[in-house]
Image (cartoon, rainbow, N blue to C red):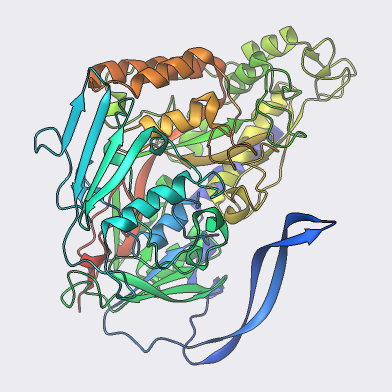
Length: 613
């Protein structure tokens, strides 16, 4: 048996015995505070100081003791196991999916997404549309007007009334150039926003902005936040005030976050049915899987395809699965990673990945089918692009890449990367983007505590070694990988080689596609990091297609343009799509009222949850 075959067999065996390695007696269970006590916590603090007459931001780690008072035992309680601790809970700064699972139980928007993939009213009385007269479009002037009639009697969790002014404030905060909002896509098309009365918001767009319904997905309170320019330092970011069914009472870093029933929720006292929702931070999803089998947690978030056969049929456990919109991918940095947030990847290319032939070679060297078969037991589908489900991908036929190591080596030879010294690692010998002798050595990074990703990394390293590329792993906690611009997160600042994680578009894919692939969405100092084109991908044809897709109400035309973009992305390879994820979560079989939702966070309907006897 060859060394590579041995490695792949070992990975397969690891996948088969995940649960065996996580039996309850071997698991260190996280602690929930049961009485008032002093707890030592560590947090990261960013503050502005004056140095040599200039104001600069300084980030430091503070360890301190705080008094934590336990919430009394609840009659109705759910323990939700989350293996990624949120870094921040402000929905317009946070980039972790895990953050949404927590803030989704507290923070609401005007419109949400149903499990069926339809828009539904939340804080608005109804979803604006042409049919109900709340949307008008003056084609000659290219002006779109959207009216939101807000629900009456809604209060924030601190008892203050929710009004149109909060919607206006949310817009102001997103658009403030110093707020650090992750994305302003769509909001920057708003030419006017006003409150005709306390419960009516009128939003005007020009030019036409097609995915307007997906905006204002979270509303923030003016009275309980701060100045928009100070948004990254609001206390709200870690202790939000919302209109949702729950409110936060404590956050013990590394241990748990406690949410309790919001007595000011508009459907109280009947809802939420739960008295308490505890987010328990676990070291890994495997720990959560062990705990749900012993009844110590009631919900395990974000499972992988490989574990479904092991959990189905287990006493007390219900497995929920549906086709997902997320795709696990590799992000390839096209710009020089030693330059902080360059906006000019053409003149400052990545020394290895700046050549499209190298990126194409990496994709050709990866056996996506084997990753699916070995690690996912064939339960996933090979990735091709962003639009694997939903109306945005209708009629979009993308051909999966072909596993072809010989073609990969030919591309690398053509790009001027050869192994002249015979050590098995190629180096620059006449390449266009690196200094002579630069070895083909790349760093891959993903989130710690994710066994599937760690196994996939090992396989990818093996594949690339076969064609002369040396890749090494340097994984980091989720909060570090998905950190904010202000925190100096390397993803935001473009200081990486290859990243691996899952992300996905919403019901309307435009904002996601525009933010990922339009050249204007590179996170920069000039825009305070408000973009998600982390690859620093630049393609003028795609820019034009995305702009056109966002400027027409015709759905078939938009579909055609999105497909055109994805076909170009396949050729340029700023990303390598590994596999399309299924949406999988496990709950106690006593939990009722929960409905799995691939279009939203899983706490989207937490007001309906109950624990049966």
